[in-house]
Image 1 (tube, rainbow, N blue to C red):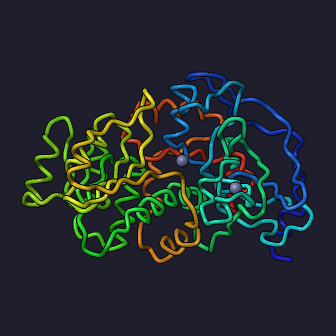
Image 2 (cartoon, rainbow, N blue to C red):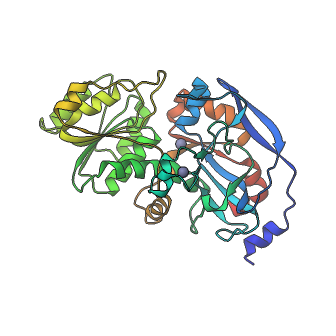
Length: 371
Ligand SMILES: [Zn+2]
Ligand SMILES: [Zn+2]
């Protein structure tokens, strides 16, 4: 038995836990709820760190995304790391005491899309923090063991949690078929935009131009990965990209802002035959705005990003080999009881926030040495 497993052997689990639940628009309560029990093939996790994602914020501000509306109180949160504290029958992949990243999607595994290599498109998928499935802004959670990926020594709970948005970025760059030396634009320097740019850099992008209106994010992007960051309200960003590329346009445009005008800007910045990859979730109205002739005359390839697939092992290797830096994206940390404040800061883009993380306070105090 490993020393960690020994420590967990001696911990008496409480029966109830705190969970941050969304009741309606801008209305999060800290509730006390029973700790779930792992069934066969499942594990009980003590959450370590959970990121506050832009999609959580959509639920928080709009009460839903598209037709996925919050009707009953729900625990959001789908970017977690945690420690295995109990294993159900038949679990072989992980053992007690292990720190794991948690893949939030639970595809059915048997439908046509699952069987043909597209589990991210499974129509029967269950996904953490998406109605009616509870997420992990809670002290404990039960997950299938196969969703838990043990983290190598030296990787932090925050890095483990950030493997989720990194996974989205890896999948996004996969869809673009980026080739070494190609030029790219990333519209939006939020966490996903920054990670897309960092993955594109690691994949050999030749030039990376970003657009971003928030000054702190723009400065962060320049420091983190971008060659140039343009201001979409103070500059004509399309003209600027054309100037930088001497009238040619870029090879690939990644839209990661979710603003009404950014898909069209991306299309206009591309060279003929370029690729537009749409990753952002539109704010407000559930519409994608693109002028047909721009895309048609250039013969653009347009790709839509739906979550991710087959990315975790690669993400772990990239972080291990320092091909990109995850930890610095976690600009703000909050305890579970501070979840409402975390959402206010993230949804109003205050204080230069990139990614806010909920780091479990009880974990810090009782298991500080293990973190
Ligand atoms: Zn997310
Ligand atoms: Zn399926």
